[in-house]
Length: 285
Image (cartoon, rainbow, N blue to C red; front, side):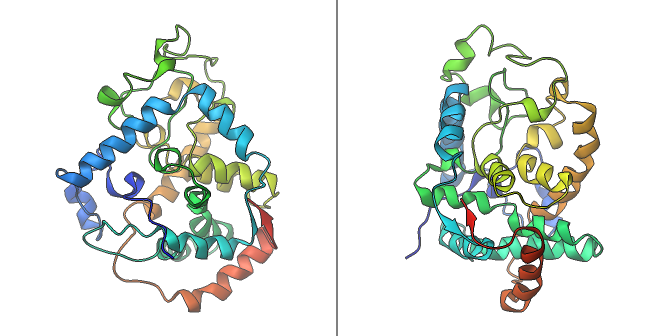
């Protein structure tokens, strides 16, 4: 049975990208008005109201034991086929195709980095949270640090945070908030969603991938940082050294959904080999 969680704002709305430029890349659907944009705005309103320090800490406690499910990477890829966005007027195909499309794009551009190919396959697997009953605003969309004032390039920043209780807190409502200058993003509490969950899951299951892979997974939806140029006051030298890697990954993730679907059956053996190399067997989710 298909499980549909509704339009995914992380795929259909990027206010910081020129729609004409994005269209040149082939498949971006430009939603600038109408009911879909209203639903996207509503999703971000819920996210920006309810993603607080307390909420995120509770989600880390809830999912940090990784007792939701035991399955392999390929089983998770197949599981996400239940997340088809049936409201998309242009294309309608399973989420797994986006995973393979991203991975194949990376493979063509970086044939010598097999670990990078695998990152393309893995990057959205944290969306299994939606199948664990989590609401969309706690799974998809752009991420941001909690515990400090949101910066200007956060999506809908000016219109969606008014009811967030943390912004009434004298500490959390400042630019640095509960953090020290240049503390490093590894010491920052990010809003809860598929990025953070998958990053923590990879650490828990001891994936043998390089640090760049963990950075890409954890921060690929942190658009205010890697695209908006914000939150530099929290970054360490290591974060800035990793930033080009996150941006390189983002080129293959953003707007890669298109009707030219890969032959997934032909690709599976290659990616199964990478899984066996870096994250084999039945894993805890």
